[in-house]
Amino acid sequence: MTTDLTLRSVVLRRMTVSDVPGCVEVLQEHDPSQDAQEWVARLGRDVADLNKGPVVAVVENLVVGYARTLPFHHDTESPPDAAPEGYYLLGLVVALAHRKRGVGRLLTAERLRWLVERGTASVYYYTHRDNVASQLLHEQMGFRGLTRKFWFPTLLPDHAEVLFCLHLPSTTAKAADSQGATSCPPRST
Ligand SMILES: CC(C)(COP(=O)(O)OP(=O)(O)OC[C@H]1O[C@@H](n2cnc3c(N)ncnc32)[C@H](O)[C@@H]1OP(=O)(O)O)[C@@H](O)C(=O)NCCC(=O)NCCS
Image (cartoon, rainbow, N blue to C red; front, side, top):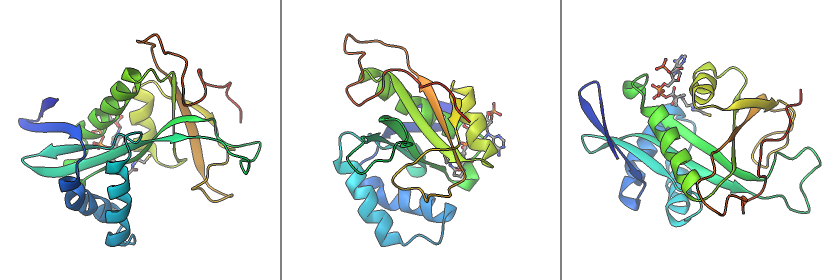
């Protein structure tokens, strides 16, 4: 998919191994405290995992944005307040110089398109309660807040994240979500 934004073409595509160095630059610009080698390893796992569907936004052969999805399943260790099972949108970061041009929206729309294609019924995402940009972007795409009180394996117990949900239109016969929940649970506090 190619979209023209402010006269510059943004190409959205599935991330490949050759995108890893460009993604590391974008991610390190956002969070310099993260070790580059850890990013390389993590991104390599993303590329290899067909369930994660990592995507990149590219402008003039330069990676300017990255995002992925994650199928989340409960296990015997999951507490009662565990976030719902299903697909999560994670990892969205756009390079500073390319923000506020619609790149984040494109990366989100592309992952939602991919999930609809897979017959996913509900998709989740969380962000810090103060991340207004992220919340406005996802609300524009139809996400609605679910709760502030939830457990997720990568979050600390006293996290300040808010959980959001979007019910996706069913386009295939396998609308029953093989990854978990089939509709957004009711909102709680
Ligand atoms: C959040 C982020 C991904 C947005 O990317 P982006 O490419 O700048 O976003 P877009 O240009 O597609 O904006 C889409 C909508 O998001 C909202 N938005 C984006 N940046 C915003 C900002 N700085 N302040 C308020 N709203 C903002 C707006 O509603 C915007 O719609 P509009 O253009 O009609 O006003 C980017 O700011 C980023 O990488 N932030 C750091 C990492 C992060 O917080 N990721 C999200 C973690 S869940």
